[in-house]
Image (cartoon, rainbow, N blue to C red; front, side):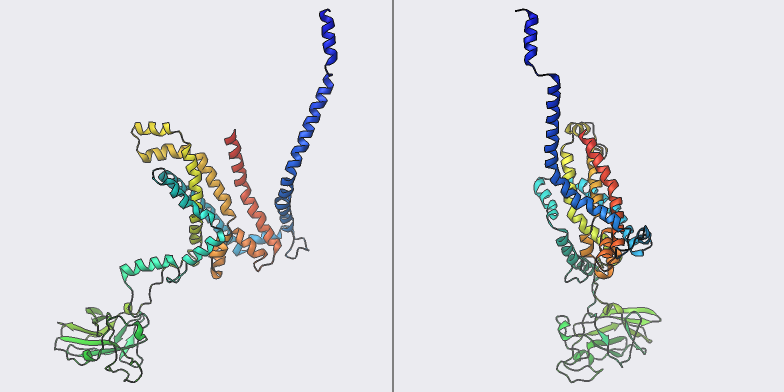
Length: 456
């Protein structure tokens, strides 16, 4: 058998080239169909939960509150004329500028420090735990923590304790002089005698408004102190509670069962200047010795009756936004720390060791090596937090009290308030939703491009 015959017989058994190409096309077509079948449920959900609501909101933003009349761009122009919306834009800007920057910085510092801690895993777990708390629960927690009443709000309880430790608190915030006595009240809440008093005299200050149960421990009856006599260079007196338990007694007179008011500051004033000052004893008595001859005015300073320090108004119009941002930091710091810590663990250790061998200190290594190498991770964390911050709703709605809700509002809460929280204007609310979407899209596109570049 010749070689030509063998080639012909071999070629006769192989399929024509056209059938191989057809089979490949059929295989590719079948693969596309199978892929579409697997992707179809996800596309269906994406269209129903994302694409359709977005398109519907865009269309709804061109109609009035009832949805029956086309108004064009009126909702968009009204949006930027509304003071509440402008305040929401301002607060959202504050959130976007402050919160992601603080979180990224805190996460970076904690991630670097945790590497040097012996119980690093436990520390990371502790900081990451707030991520398991819902925004609703976190809002309730911080609403209580920020409460103005020190008996409820833990932050104000701490602030009041520190304040009172250094400045002290007034002993008798509810006390006042009995009406009709020889005393005048100053604009600062102080009380002073109407007429001048000379050394050798005895002055009484009858006070009311203090409950017997609120008297300091160790307060003694004032009656013995009111019966003494002063020497020629001495000025004496007594500050007492002009109230007899069980009734009876005479107004303006020290009775046997009436208690003195200890710890009350008393000043002897002459010519508009304080010549001497003292504090009442347990029976309410006070004494000025060695005074020059002449007339003095005795004064109970307003600090004796100052209301107790109530702490900081965390949820007032001024501090409500920083207070809510503080709650947000508590929740998301662990997230930033863990992501940055993962990037930190992937850094080339030989570069760090080489820098240490060259004499660089830890601050120089952190600033010139660690941070530049972590720049891609820090950027991703920052942009992710920017996207998240723009959508913040729960914390603002739960923490901010009703009277200051407008001072704390952001675009997400304003959108809800305009649409469902009393405004009942879904047209304007949809316009706000479109604005929020337009603000979020650039950050999302930036993040997607970052991920694609890192994969390549």
